[in-house]
Image (cartoon, rainbow, N blue to C red; front, side):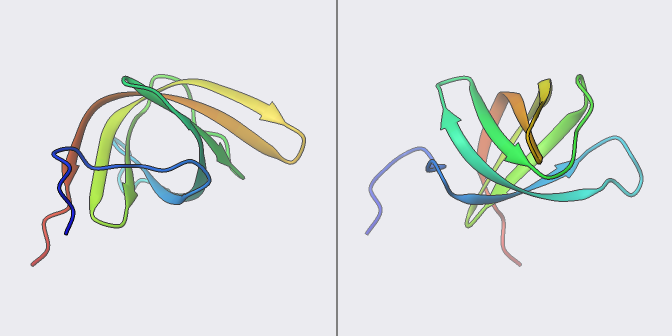
Amino acid sequence: MEQRRERRFKPNQAVVIKVLGLSPGPIIQACVLDISASGMRLRSKLPVPCGVPVSIEVNDAVASGSVFRCDPKQDSYELGVKVSEIAPVLKA
């Protein structure tokens, strides 16, 4: 049984990015490249504008934050996301 108090996002794990503030916001598939205490670096096939609020979902957790970097890298984009909160996904 999981004993951690915080939800975990693992490197190389597939995630779903939802762009908030746009109705309806795009849903983008991405991959976690790196994680720190306050942010994530993700790889996406699509760009996400800097300053845009996003939610990042994986398994049973969702992280909220905003994009502060979007750099083109060959056939993809590297996104820097400043994470403000990680919470469990509420299931109905």
